[in-house]
Length: 250
Image: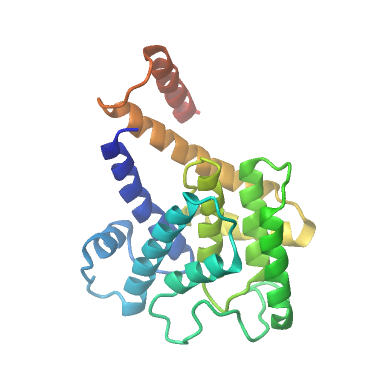
């Protein structure tokens, strides 16, 4: 795609993913406020310093994820901990990038995360699983990785944001667009995670992620074919436009 299209999409998804992922965790910055914060560094009246730092940290973590996506090196604990350090920018507890040292329970549920005594062993096993060959479809693989990571819950805080960034790192490495789980579907997303943990039923979670990938794909293609600089065969261009129109109608 032309450079201006790539840059437009990069900026768009920096804002879109940062806004929705932080909002899922309770950040009250609006979409437009998030854009102002991460693109200009300006502060928003009435919003906390912590909320500003969450947005900035998430944007920096996404930049790091995009760099990792272009690399062929295996994803290790070091990279995951670095993502966490960036996500938790400004955290006052001083444990950014460090695994939790206490046992925790999922808020609002009876689900107990693994003991902190087993975190290192579980994370070692997790990154080993990431590099093992498998027959899963790339979206299913990214979804399963997301579920496994957030179920280990290796950090005191920030696991959801890191997990969604990890999800997108795996999608990008497989040449899929970024998947944005919208804050408007937060309850559905949480319920899907709870169901998957309780019964090993990942259908709802996979469905959410498939929807997100499809929406992003439509957006990417729509933006690309709208550019006069995009070089695509006329028959293929017509086919893409027809598919976009049909999908949007349904």
